[in-house]
Length: 83
Image 1 (tube, one colour):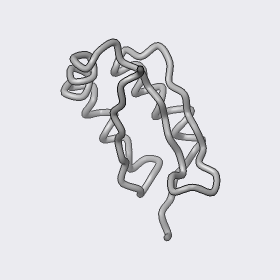
Image 2: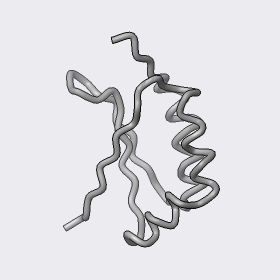
Image 3: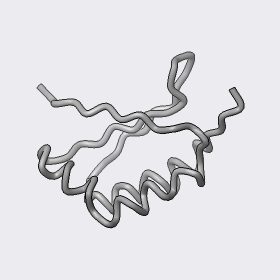
Image 4: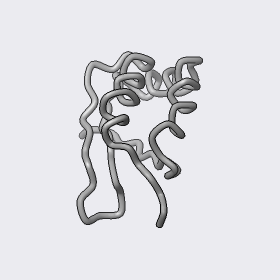
């Protein structure tokens, strides 16, 4: 309660920043409705190695530093394999 999330900033600024930093061709954004999450973004990397490289890159630090600009909610990450 009292948490904030700016969906407009997230879609217009944060997700494009992440796409550029991580070399993603696409990111699908969802706005939560009647569930435990206010938002989700689905991104796809070429491999687990590519994910690891993206997360440890210097550009990733800027993506993480941007979080307070649109939310007070601590992010949660789910890593999945497409089958």
